[in-house]
Amino acid sequence: MDRPITEPPRPGSSARFPADFGIRSLLTVDTEEEFDWSGPFTRDRHGMSHFTHIPRFQSFCEELGVVPVYLVDWPVATSPQAVEVIGSAVSAGRAEVGIQLHPWVNPPFEEEVGAFTSYAGNLPFALEREKFFRLRDKIEQAFGVPPLIYRAGRYGLGRDTASILREARVPIDSSVRANFDYRAGHGPDYSRHPLAPYWVDSERALLELPLTTVYWGMLRRQGRWIHPLLGRIPRMTGAFSRLGLLERIALTPEGVTAEEALRGIDMAIDDRLPLLVLSFHSPSLAPGNTPYVRSEADLERLYDWFRRVYMYLDMRGVTPTSVRDILRAVSH
Image (cartoon, rainbow, N blue to C red; front, side, top):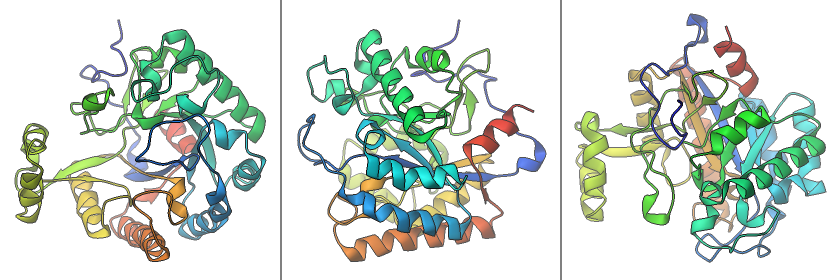
């Protein structure tokens, strides 16, 4: 019997890629409404104004030779403006579209809104399933293509999410944020999950692409047990990083400097990961929507982060890829 998707996979579940696949990178965009990250979850207090900034980002990606994966939620899939902006790139093959479920803004609205229910995997199975299928169907209707990849909002997988994805014939999940533990906020624990892509089920119908987060420093091989201990004393986490002992690095421009990301890329390559999964949230493409981009200067730093990261990836022989290319590679 297969393990729940929230648990680490069994040994031998690693996905195998052909030799000519090399090492590649995938850029995922949590494409969502604007809301107050420090406030309570609400059904209606959100905006969509940052979508006027998406064309600049899409053009930027095309110049880099990157096919971004827009993981869209309900407010995005039901916004004519958002669908027009993203859909033209998807239709031209210059972008891909996937699913991101924010349950608090996704019908049907049967649960009480709060921190616990903000993780879709914490909902009753029937409600998680119904929300998911309504969103999946809306995305296919809006963009004209079946979405092939899923990310649970807030990385909130549940024990039965895999069965929903298999039923929907969505072949890829990318909700596992390896080396992170969200149990303190009612979420899943991914601190023991692998970084390399793996099969969730024995039938190999569902592929997991964990977001790339590595440990750097002299103690990085012990990072999985040392870093959680440091988290109990925040000042120690910073001290260990400054001393070059241990640092957790996620491949995202949100809260991670370009210098840190380049070190993380080196560690991922040293660990022979076949795929590096980068991520960020679409509201960061306009100032004032997230804690990471408060000003125009912050926004330019975000774009500079991507320039430097992709230049370094190219120098290290890591090429951009797409969801479709990944599926073709693992099916061989």
